[in-house]
Structures are given as structure tokens and as C-alpha cells.
Length: 192
Image (cartoon, rainbow, N blue to C red; front, side):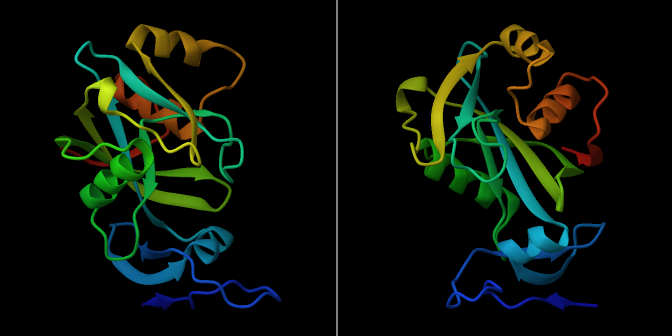
């Protein structure tokens, strides 16, 4: 069965074009398409991509999401967290996110894992995680989406995530728990 939801907002405002996402089943097969707002309003399963970007010293680039982001404003997140647009592949979405969010291109990324999880109310995704390396001097982040960036060692990251004050996106914490071999709520679909 295929699902298609028109690409406009259901408000009294004139129709607006928004991002179109592929809707997927439990096996990550595309079964339809819908506008971003409809996907999140109805809790439809869609795709995401994350990148963990390291420097030569093994420190991870962590972004602080801008205060005006709808999801998890002002919280610390993966180097890149991106929705996969309709018809786009996971690696293409990861590369697009690197370019749009961090201003870096020509980064070799390696697939790590594909997983399924609930990011928040009505935010159900199958996501792919990638890792790569970059020279910090080449990173020029987008100040609209990102408030700031920092490069943290794994020890600094673990210490920060252990604090009782939540300053990290919930999905980022779960991704890192899985990455470190700890118990996580991620449902792994397959490792790479």
C-alpha cells in the first residue's frame, strides 16, 4: 500500500512548498511520500542521517543547535543530523548536511550502522550513522542552524553526558551509547 500526502500545509495560509520525505516501512522500503509537516504530525516513519566528524586527534565535532530550531533547540548534537529528502540516498543526505551545516565538502565518510528509533513525539526515523575526519580549520558552520561548535575528546563527551543537567539531544546520547558499546534504545537494523 502506498501513502501520498499532498505537499502543502493544512492551514488558512496559502499553500507553501516544504521538504518532501520518503515514507518507509519497518524494512526501510519506500511506501510513499509526504511533506515534512505531515510526516511529523502523523508520526510516519521516514529517514535520517547523522555524521560523527573527528579531527586528527580523535576529538569529535559537536554542534550546539541554534535556539530557534523546532526540535531540541540550544542542545548539543552530532556533527551533522539531517533528514533524508525524498529520492535522496543516506550518504547523499550526510554529504549535503556536511556542506550545508559545516561548509565542508570532499569528506570521506564511512557507514557505521543503520538503526531505527523514536526521536520524539511523532518523530519516527530509520537513520544511518557515518563517521569521517576533517581539519578543524576547514569547518565554517551555518550560524542559522548552529549556534556554535566544539571539538571534544571521548572522555570530555562522556563526562558531559553523565551530568544530570540535560544539555545533549536525546538521540545524540543514544547514538553515542551505542557507539561506545553501552546499552542504547536504538534498534540496530544492520552494522556496516
